[in-house]
Image 1 (cartoon, rainbow over the protein chains, first blue to last red):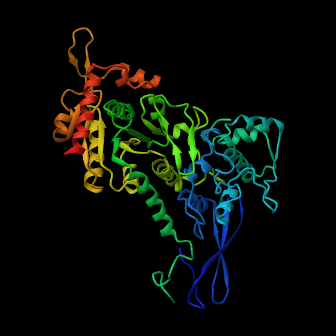
Image 2 (cartoon, rainbow over the protein chains, first blue to last red; image 1 turned 180 degrees about the horizontal axis):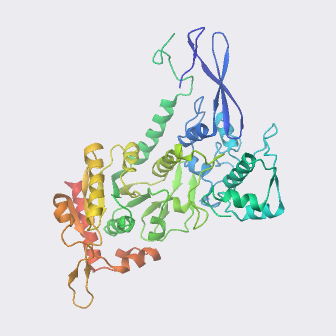
Image 3 (tube, rainbow over the protein chains, first blue to last red; image 1 turned 30 degrees about the vertical axis):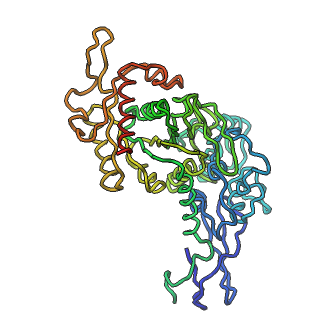
Length: 178
Length: 293
């Protein structure tokens, strides 16, 4: 991927990345001659593709550690699969204070515990206690996907509160039962 | 306006350099491994993983150092079959120590990393929508790390147990350009042979990977009363007919092979003079001969 400043006919350089929003990442490139900046937006699928290739915009500041991608990206992983991972050994590129700004930003985009500096987009939907209880019964590894899908279904159909009935109506859209 | 080729680099990301570094990492790891063998099939359910487990056991019992990469990322079974399912993987900065069976075979498998028995492989993502665009790449990334980031040490043989079908082999060949050869497992049915032929074409004609040979599993069963050989499937269409020039051997059906797989005890280490053990040991010898000639 290359970027050209048309006015200067000069190759632009990678400059920075910004905080992700809902899985998307913004990379900034700058013309070294006129200092014009452009922003490239990656949608969540494109961000995910970049992660899956274990490639980094702006280049890697350090070599990947053993099984870095699997250790950081497997959602259904056993917590204690690996022994001897101390804070010194822990991968610096799995969202724990990574040295590479792009990598840590990418990791943040998919870290459920990450608290962004700006207010995240809220669904604006209320969940009834019954609906929340049913949501909890969905296996943890598909729950976020199911929650997002139910909320999307509710929004698309003009609902402001998610009830058991709306979950029933949305059920047909998902491979898992709840 | 400058063209793509006239621009000096990719804005500083050095993607080619990053990809080259990944390839070099695998190459360095494989430099201590003498022979790499992919075990593949056309269709699922032909007993490929059980054959992989027991071929590894046969080679280990002959005194060779052997490792297995369970390349079936979404359906891993090797760890259970060889009895290391509860093993922990020791992390070091130079690599991950593989699980080691009671006989000394080294194993890496996605099964060792999954949280629960019924947990599928799911990757972190803001949304699984459009996951088809990246999931396969994630799986190849996992395979790359399994091969390149496992501390194999010095190995005589590294066996790669591929998922059914011929689509994973090109990924393996990209990761291991000097793949030593392919063993194809089939059963005596026309349907299986039809698909196996596609795998052979993919390996030999398209990817230029040497075919070590074809193994016919569940070729027959031996009557426990009279010792006669009875067919389980078609009588006529055996690999010795269809793949006569590259047949490595025929393995009879024995229900104990399945129960050993379920129990995590390699059959060959439990039963020493059965037709199955003799057949698999002979196939292992032919694999050795393939590399020694």
